[in-house]
Image (cartoon, rainbow, N blue to C red; front, top):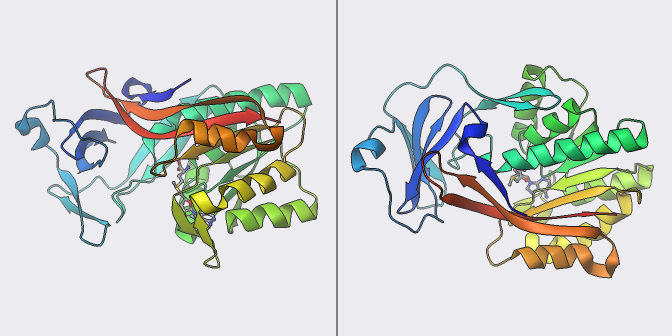
Length: 293
Ligand SMILES: C[S@@+](CC[C@H](N)C(=O)[O-])C[C@H]1O[C@@H](n2cnc3c(N)ncnc32)[C@H](O)[C@@H]1O
């Protein structure tokens, strides 16, 4: 199974072209060109199409991103996503890392999560309890809350949580628990308090740090992170969605770590990516594994 975002699924986003280390997108009406290290092929669109980009991000020596805006940006930029359970709205802002508050390859993941929540709600006869770990600005949390889940959103960044709360308000939601905490600490603390979850999404970076500077390293911490994740999940059809953007970690590696000790069943894995608007290329953007326990 692969989960690819098709540009036509979102009216506020289109991937126009990619190549030569860059991607060309239309984000909420703004034509944007920004770095895309995976794009090792040649660009397809003519140079004059790329020259129409009014916001360009280039890599700095320190590894961050520097934006140049040839035209003032709209006062506010939003992404609207229509799910089965209603629409969510997320604010878009260009950040120093060359990001904009949304990782567009996650759109089909939102749909997958919405289906899990709807199914569980019907099975359990109550609101499923779910967590979004390393949740950033919260789009997946909003989608799961719209579908009727009780959501714990966990991220170590205060800025990401404040941004998420703005998205929650714009999406006419108000019951998500926003936790500024190290993801692993959250699992230990809440397990000890007696919380048991019906589903979990984890989209960890290769490297990061918790709210109190706890170090997170994907390869080093994944197995023990999954011990804690498994412990806190109810063993009645609870779902797990795990993704990776870590160089050298392949789909089967994610599946193997979920399979350890026979804990998760119905294992699946695949690629994440974004389909171009006008041709059939997919821009790869990580991979995932899923399972139930
Ligand atoms: C790849 S982003 C997640 C993107 C998100 N899944 C989405 O689609 O919007 C990684 C996030 O992990 C957070 N983070 C990094 N280390 C963390 C840690 N130890 N505990 C909690 N959050 C952490 C960062 O602040 C960042 O927001």
